[in-house]
Image (cartoon, rainbow, N blue to C red; front, side, top):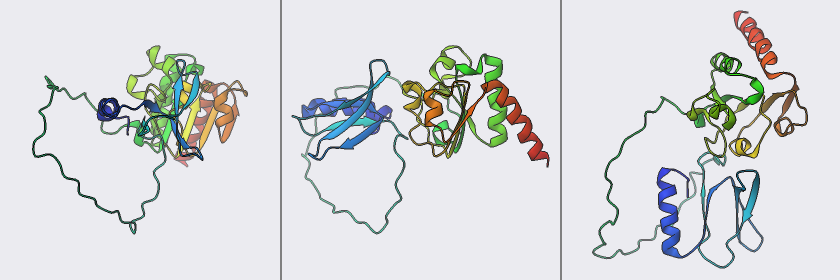
Length: 235
């Protein structure tokens, strides 16, 4: 079940009715040779990934954040068998009453749909340096994402948070500036096609995940990169 606002409310209620377990906000799923669903979810404050199985109860249930898996190509030649199930003539009335609904203000688009992402972490040094990522994102036609410490420090809005507690992104290319690669952040990067990481520490987890790893000060490299991009655009 998708870990949307509706899914997060619906899934635990359904699991309770079916008397089975539920793993929430999974970042991966797998199947064992015995047919058990392996539910991979962050645990211990997001510092570890737990592999959870439901051995004795059925059905096996999990919620997965939107964007965790890459969309598979559609096969329009496949057809499904429609089975009609009878419903009782009368259903019990709802036991939950919605008192008020208020829609949060939304931008024209969300970072989950961005094809180019520029993400920054504490390695940017300060808020002024971090804000330079906005200029790079504009030049590349992309969006800016942030790690949790950056959001908590007030350098970026919560809508820009990428990772376990924020958005799951699936860009074609991701630029990672000054990000070490804690699981809380990398949990949201499962579908990035190509990663360029810039960090002073060559042993950082993010550098090991990257397709291209640049050992440099993130702020200094960003300034040079923006300057070179502007030069190429003028040409």
